[in-house]
Length: 133
Image 1: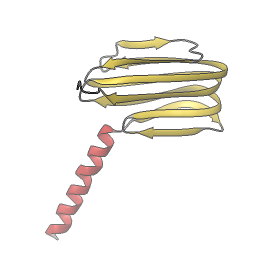
Image 2: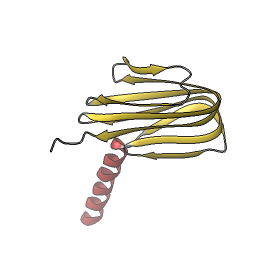
Image 3: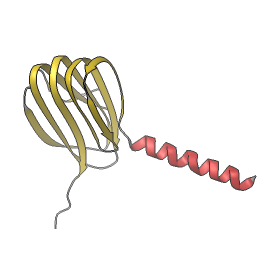
Image 4: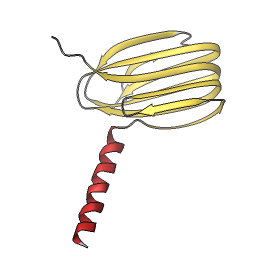
């Protein structure tokens, strides 16, 4: 019985640790023919039509490189990235086809993507900063 309690406790700790580093998301949207891939350090979605908004939340414990890429075939797509205190870090309306990279600092971040009959894709990742050799 004691081993079972220890095993259950360890499983809960590991599950919590995995959830703490993963990208969580929610939103209110309709999507047609989509493929989505979310990992502990990235979120991406490709689709034929995206209407509404999608919110992704993640945390980083050290300085990271935040990269975003957008592709537009039709419609419009807007995004805003805020930090844990709600301050806007990055923002752009009607992004078109663009990508960027910038450093982000330890903390919590929220990315809100809003599509208006958008056909295309978006991706975000937060990579470790390469160490100087």
